[in-house]
Image 1 (cartoon, one colour):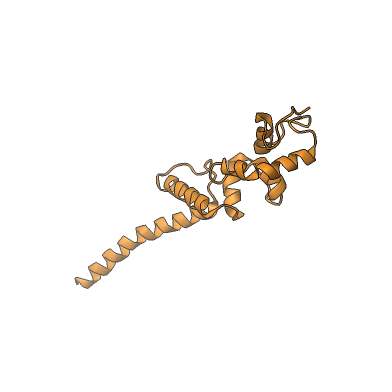
Image 2 (tube, one colour):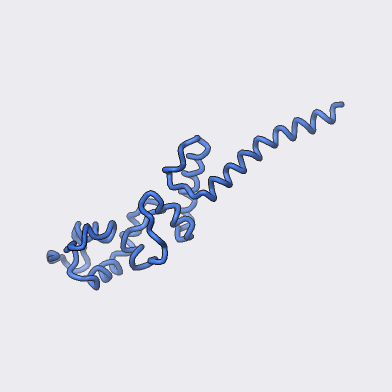
Length: 144
């Protein structure tokens, strides 16, 4: 049974429940689903603000955006990026981080990077490599 909490406050266990979901089918952080939903409605903004860029709490996935399929923590940021649910600041932060990882040669398979961005950056690298060759060829033909 959930302990008595002052109105407007969450216990540590209730916060954990709203952020990560129930531990199991017998989780007793809340007395019923209505209480879970009411707590989410009341604490949504603070819980969302506590998330790192691209991440969302369990309550958001269940109550606000259930249509976005949860495929696990390792895919969450890319899924939210594709679903276009990130703020402009979050999107810019993640793209900057992912782009840096790409150009430093990091393994992106485990970095939760959208394939679309990887394809774009690979094309950019190819263009960069082709530009000097084209400039050299043009310079060489002019000096003949």
